[in-house]
Image (tube, rainbow, N blue to C red; front, side):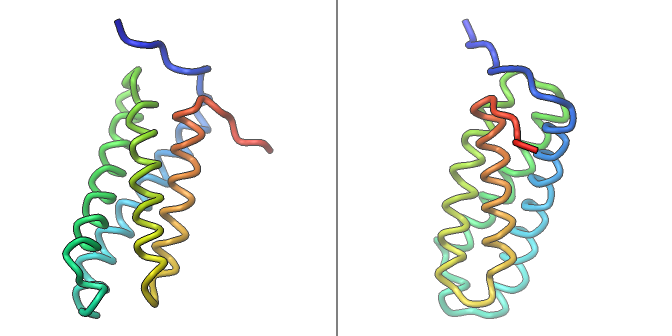
Length: 122
């Protein structure tokens, strides 16, 4: 039997997380296929590109789970937080990747809140 979701999430909290996941999806996909491949060198390292593309895909999937109101969305949010944080660390080691680092960390924070059933303090 599935574990019930943590405390109910407000529509506003879910929408904020959905928006960040979609922003992170767009940013990682664009940066990986544009900036990183064009820049070359360490930016185009297979592990880095693979992580960025995986992050983009998981962010999109996480947003879809929340949009579908899937009861187990919080589990996907937990995985998304972990991958976004790993992507931020990878991007942080390269120059000109500040935007990607920022959006990945923000997405990781919001996904972690949803995964843990926490609400954002106002």
